[in-house]
Image 1 (cartoon, chains in turn yellow, green, blue):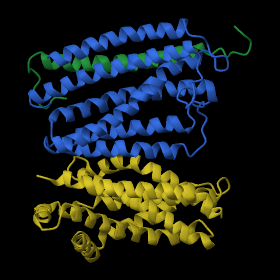
Image 2 (cartoon, each protein chain N blue to C red):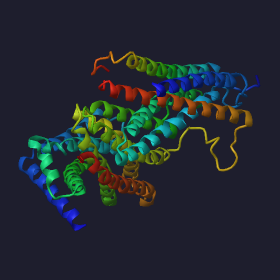
Image 3 (tube, rainbow over the protein chains, first blue to last red):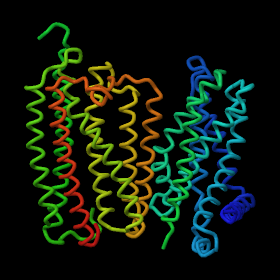
Image 4 (tube, each protein chain N blue to C red):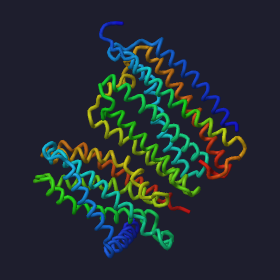
Length: 226
Length: 48
Length: 221
């Protein structure tokens, strides 16, 4: 059991180190996030739509698309030089392989969100107060769900024609339920509603995460078996 | 007709027509695609 | 090919019976007082909806069995179920808004059940697109099986999320714990229609499976 996590972490660290050395993907995703937020800011008529009404949508659309970008590169690292075969030949189990990719993606997307959230608060004049931690919680729950399914699907998308388009087409319908719950919770939090009101959404998000992380781990080996 | 019942039979017919068109089109597409293949393997591979 | 002929025969019979259902719905089923004749759209809309959802579930189950048994027939069935499900889903999305216009006054309202079927439709289309985009014959059925299983598993979550928003959909009239609220003539029409759609699904899937086999034998088009 500890092997599973140790190998996974080794693999995740490898990806994150490669990422850290070039930083291109991260910077692109970060800039993209800022730009999408700006699209929302400039795309609205300030006299017609209040910032606080648009805020939850802006937040979630931005992060959804940023996550999509991040996931697109998940398996691209191994495309060249048959690096993926090298990974498969290693003693790490298939589950570690997936878990490693998942953790790496989570760190990557999490970093983007850590950058985007303060900007979002700034641009939309959102007053968070005590809602900050619950909001981070909602963010984390939703992200785990997106990234789990996204990591699984990116392994498939990479072998198709039009890989960059294939991932969103496959992934977005799966992302809509957690998106609905997260948006509902965010709206409630920004309106300073009591926490009890978002409990349902949080439970559903957690259930989705548990189910899909498990399912993704179980199904991944079938994608890469001989 | 009793008073108050909406006169929307047109919508009913429209919906039934839409359903029929969709179902028949699919049936026909199946028929044509099957026919192409049982006319011997004349279709060159790679053709949709 | 025998399967294709049997499938074709079943389909033809289903269409004849469907015409019978149409006649029964128009002429021999009472008009619902509050909604008017447009309520009769229900007799087509609901069976199509049920079978669309069943198609997705069967797709997932076939995927699970395929991953373990590796039997090509399961993959052909999955592909067929997805395509037929898409066609039936189109019927749901086509008839739903027309009925909706008469009941809600608007062509599209983001109410739970139509939203659910829109998402199911997108899942099915995504599945078919994936199949078309994977060129490797060994990978395609495996990837499709994995996606199919995920589609099946996400269905309950979609149900949960769309019902969060109070909807305009008429309250469940048939599937209730106690006796269904439809009068017997309407219930019969619905039952007959459902039986016909079952036959239609079977006929379509049989033909589509036959088509898949023919394609493979001729070197995959």
